[in-house]
Image 1 (cartoon, rainbow, N blue to C red):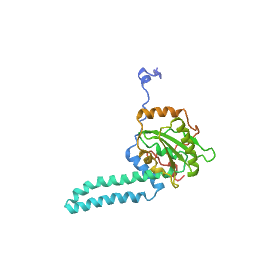
Image 2 (image 1 turned 90 degrees about the vertical axis):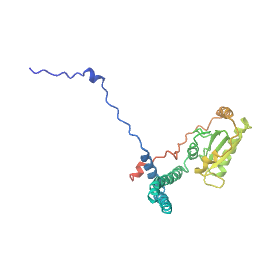
Image 3 (image 1 turned 60 degrees about the horizontal axis):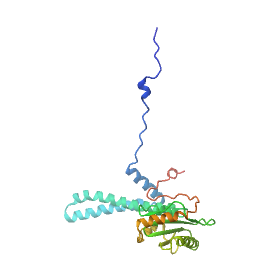
Image 4 (image 1 turned 180 degrees about the vertical axis):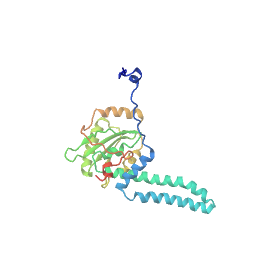
Length: 246
């Protein structure tokens, strides 16, 4: 009689576990390609700008090589510099394209402000909201004092800013408060220049004073209304459905 093999798992098979699938890393050139595709949809001329930067830098290296009689050496050295110039142009155009995508959306100014890496704290919740027009005011705290940034037309946002400034000065009368209107109108700060405008403010407070002001302002709270999160211009991803023509 033939012996039947047991189908029960052996101790070795019980202890073995399926191998976890390796997470595929996103290489830097994949990110560059994604940034290029996203920028090309918004600004089709970006390809010519990149080529012009690459060819122009290479031509300059060739010209210098001819003048010093070192053509081959200058071409070899010029290729990395030409690639760097092309990447620099792509980065600047990608940033502008990202700002154009979020411009006009609620919370766009907050997305621009949160690109400030250090020195400022901008909570996600607005501190004031106009229920009719949906104009928003965001508050930031840093060593330059308190910054209030409003989204919306100048006349409406000015009223919101002034009302919020009065609230702050009642509890913090000696703290400098800067009012900024984000937008493209007269006297407003365009979205791409918003973060730089805040960073240029002169520091007048110590870190301990900033911490104390932060605690005092928490008592005021925020508008506590849901605001769609904006796009970080430095982490923008392409719309894959749009790329497939859907």
